[in-house]
Image (tube, rainbow, N blue to C red; front, side):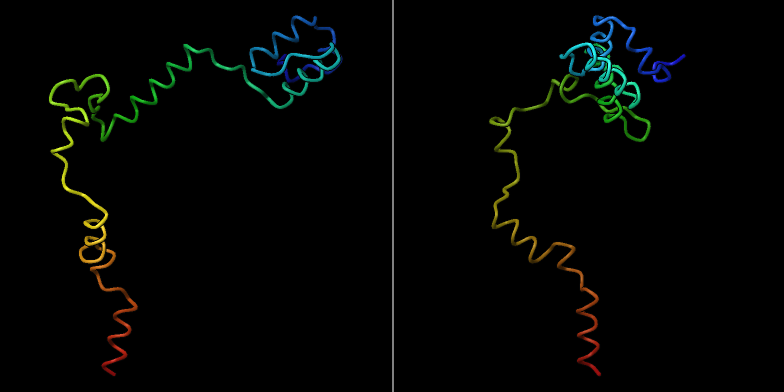
Amino acid sequence: MEESELSFEEKSTWTVASLKDYLRIRGLKQTGNKTKLIALVYGASQLGVQPKPNEVEEDRKRSEQYRKVLKICGKTLPDPLSELNDNWKGEKEGEHCWPPVSYYAITEWLLREAPCVSQPSIRDKERASALHE
């Protein structure tokens, strides 16, 4: 029989320590008298609150997710934080290698060369055709 199938009365036979353990492993509040603890346990079981993973399991899941991010088109890229130690320069040493980018340069590019600006819009085409009619 699953925990969610246990009735309120059946959970009331549990000891205070058992009730607190049930709540603790789910990361829930464990304070109050026995009646309140029973209500919390019953509510958690009805809502299907799952036990929280421990830190080792959480770390494993984070590592697995991180590895998935590094995998592109079936190929795993090297981890830039741990595997790429050579030919990397710090910000201070490599700053002189950066292209010159200022607000002025960005504005100039946006106004002259950006695809959203340089390509004629439908409205521009409509205006041009209206002038020729």
